[in-house]
Length: 330
Image (cartoon, rainbow, N blue to C red; front, side, top):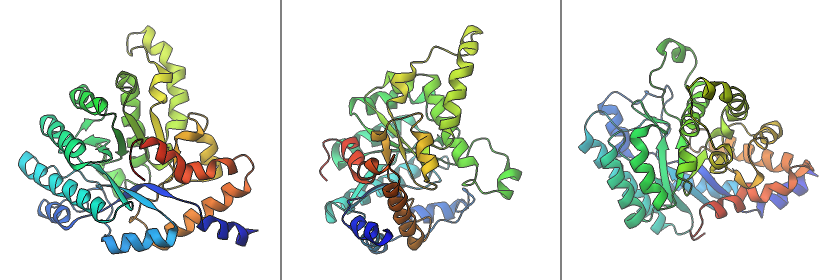
């Protein structure tokens, strides 16, 4: 049975919506500011040849690239704009060179909102970016904050897909993260924090043509959203929160399965979303390629063997991403 599934899996198309490319100029900037370990985990090495080899071995047809953490902002807007422009233009050239293999979501020089708007317009309108990557927070400026409403308006006009990615919380308990790296707990908590911030201000319903991809299997949202719904009426009655359009906010959230996908995780996600909002993500190159290949194969197997999930497999691996990135050539 497993052998048959493995053979069939080779023919399945896969789109990877959660992976990163790490450029020398980015690393040089971090080193110059002593920030290479800011996210409490060493940056892996990356090159296009290795990425293509991983994709071929895993059966991945196309990868959607994003800049990793940390945000290259150290108080100098010109420096940040230069590093991010170099990254976005490199990705655009990569997309042209390897037609059909790579797409990218452009980075922005936040927390400078004016510079971010200019870069978003250039990346989407001129470079042909397939979306935008936003950090959960950029030096304390959180996705969902009022300061970003003008940027959200621009992205909404362009019906942008936004890939969200956790960054080091601000503020953060340095003692806690010294014992347990950010990826263990703070990243899921940080992702949840940013999405809750957006929902609390009805950002997703007010900018209804923007769609967000939430990373790492929805983080803690399958637990946080029901709790938030339960306490929300009391908070509104006391004047601590505003009314929330739950349906309009939640319909704009998509979820990648990078990191820890299991049958239980997928079923839990389906308590807050629909099957067409689940996407495959590898998180390459943050784990060895053989680990990621084995994880993808395991997912193919357990989904193929589960009567309640088998019908979702091709959509999660490929079809949902095609629909999300509408009008993009695959």
